[in-house]
Amino acid sequence: MELQLIQQKIHEIRGHKVMLDFDLAEMYGTETRLLKLAVRRNIQRFPDDFMFELTKEEFNILRSQFVILEPLGKGKHSKYLPFAFTEQGVAMLSSVLNSERAIEVNIGIMRAFVAIRRYALTYTELAQRLTELEIRSEDFEKALVLLLQDRKDKKDWEKRERIGFKKK
Image (cartoon, rainbow, N blue to C red; front, side):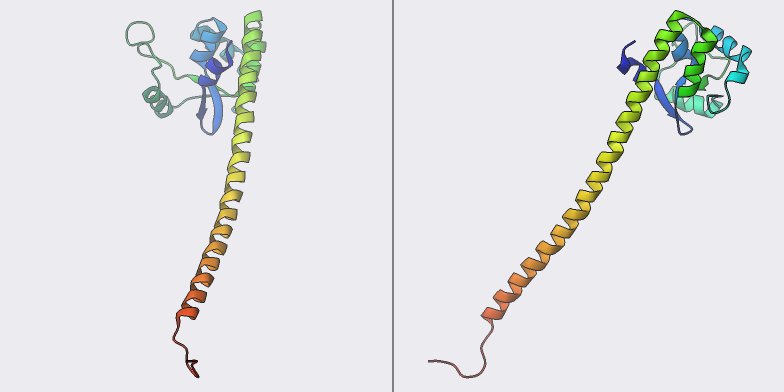
């Protein structure tokens, strides 16, 4: 599977990077209902930090952001709220589904999660460096203002009218 394609299917919900059951089912080449059935049969393998079911509100927000269901026909009105799988939940899915395709897809998904984590770390480092540069630039700006003010004060001092004895 192409890394970018997988990354597009990773969403942030409740502060977790997750993939939704219908996206995973499509990638695994199975029906969403069969994937959910396999998960429900092995629910003890999926604690809350591995998988959770979206609320209606979360699902509606997600639907408004992305075109999830087909406009006509199959999937027009979903009866059930989707499951959201964290990285660990996706890894656990390969043991539940237990097929060659599931293993291959999971390897691609794990690589996508790692790439996102690397990007996030790089972004954090860059933001930190930018903050440091901003602080330095503020210091340079203050020093420059002081130098220019000092120079102006010297010019004003030289232009003043002299008092005392004057040479003719």
